Length: 71
Image (tube, rainbow, N blue to C red):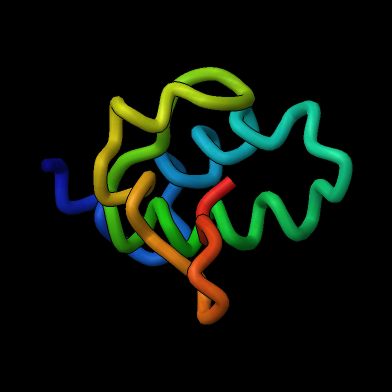
């Protein structure tokens, strides 16, 4: 992976998360958690919903309550 993409708050993650969260009801929360997941996983599933099979790390992250962390 390009080292520039791995930097915190990378353009890659912000672009991918903007697309992922385009139709989210709570945009700021979606962008926040998507960004956290993207930085850790270096991957965001395509589209605005679903497709999490494309990125197992993103899919498998859970919050403290055991629910999916990544939008």
